[in-house]
Image 1 (tube, helix red, strand yellow):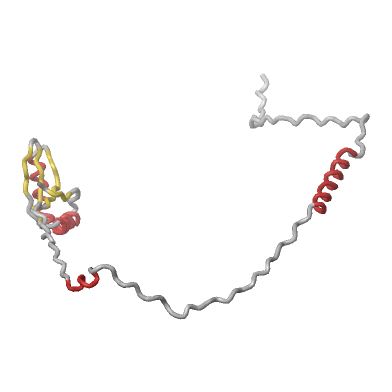
Image 2: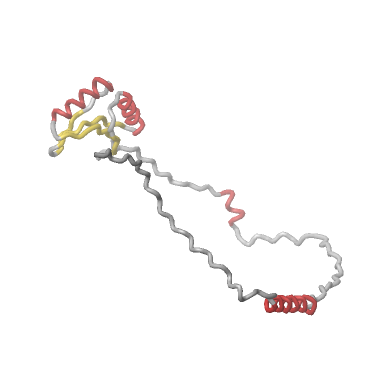
Length: 180
């Protein structure tokens, strides 16, 4: 038995399209001088030249304007007399304005740090706030939820200060609200 032939497998070749073969020019027809194209070009140049020289530009009209001497008024007219009386009475008048007192914000700010279904989770967050943040919080039971609330605060700035203290202690998610 003859050993099998060891032929190298060649990489698949890319099939390319061949360009169409060029056809030789017909020998029977020779190209001559392009009389038609030259005659059209000469006619166009002649028309352009005719219109450039035939159409004249009108000469600009220059008008001579004589300067008239400016009359200076010798004096200003008299100041008009006031027709109304308020100009005399206004300086002696005193205006009284009633300014209502601004009511201070009586609604407190509260900061809610969590809302849980189970009371045990709320107690855990309350303990974290007390140990890490050093703040006292309360748990409010509303419906089936247990909310961990800090406050009331008189001003929002005070609530912000406590919220930043809790954020430094890695207790996030507290929100400050107006509470009715």
